[in-house]
Length: 87
Image 1 (cartoon, rainbow, N blue to C red):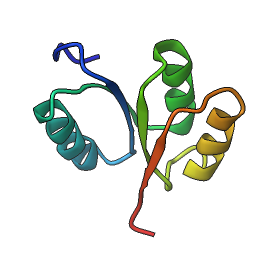
Image 2 (cartoon, rainbow, N blue to C red):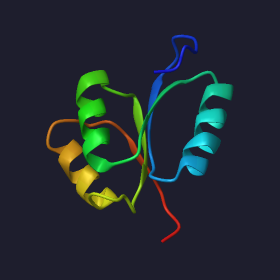
Image 3 (cartoon, helix red, strand yellow):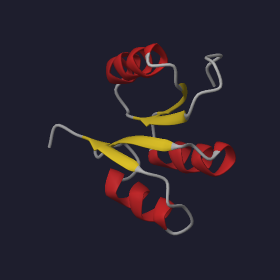
């Protein structure tokens, strides 16, 4: 987790390091805290453990579709999910 001020927590979920780096920079510059996940399974574990205020979610992940991650989150959370995808 970042050491940014106590702003809202954003979970960045993308398998491409350069995309995560861009999002991490933008999110931190806006004063938000952030977590990063490169797989759907990792994202679900982090969401359960840290309870983010918003999820930035790529649809193309190596272990599952982003849609599956969103559906799994919806079983227990109402966190806003912003889908980021080139599809």
